Each structure stands twice: as structure tokens, then as C-alpha cells.
Length: 162
Image (cartoon, rainbow, N blue to C red; front, side, top):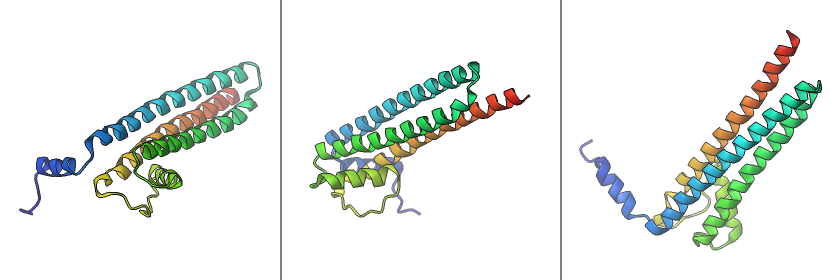
């Protein structure tokens, strides 16, 4: 136990091993992608709410199911776009020699599958962590909105039944 470094020593060692100028690009990409993802998911949720309120008001509540399926497809596509954004960031940073490897790496890390089949330079060992966290948070936001949409259908259906 006495051989464990304190937090500041560990943080310093990790920081010294990273390419700081490029790391800013990685963190800014993650933050920008998450903000854009959150705003878009909120927009999809709000549009869905307006659409099912309209469908309920016009007596066509059954349309809430196709509206939900379209929302699921749109949310799915936002995750594909997120992976593509990561791919271009990785290409811009010259981390991979082959562009398709950047796409597969981004997809593996974003979805947290992470087979570890792509060797990274020693100073980029933190990259999978950042990409994975962005994918986890984006998926959590998407899941929360989709769960809320199902709740809206159930609540409206229960109100109609009563």
C-alpha cells in the first residue's frame, strides 16, 4: 500500500504522457458533440410531444406509435453522426494511418465494445476513455428521452381509457 502514488503524482504522470495540444481538440470534440447531441435530442423530444398532443387532440392517437418509431430512427442516426464526428477528429489528429480504422475504432469505443484491436501510440492511451464516456453519456441522454416518449404514450392512453 505504501507504494501507491498520491493523486497529484498520478495526475502529473498521466498529464506528462499526453499530447496536450491535441488533447484539447479531443476534449473539445467530446464536449461539442455532447452539447449538440443533447440539444438535438431535446428538439426531437419536444417535436414528438407536440405531434402526439396534436394526434391526441384530433382523435388520431394511434399516430403516436409511428411517430415514436420515427423518433427512434432519428435518435439512432444521431449516434451514427456522433461516431462519424469522432472519426473525422481522429483522422484530423493523424492517430490512424487508415481512415476506415478510425471509423471502426470510434464505433468500438463509442459503443464501449472496445475489443482493443487497434494499437494506439503510448501517449494516446486516454483516447478510448474519452470516446467511451461521450458514447455512454450520449446513449444515456437518448435513452432518457425515448423512455419519456414511451411514458407520454402510456399516460395519454391511460387518460383516454379512464
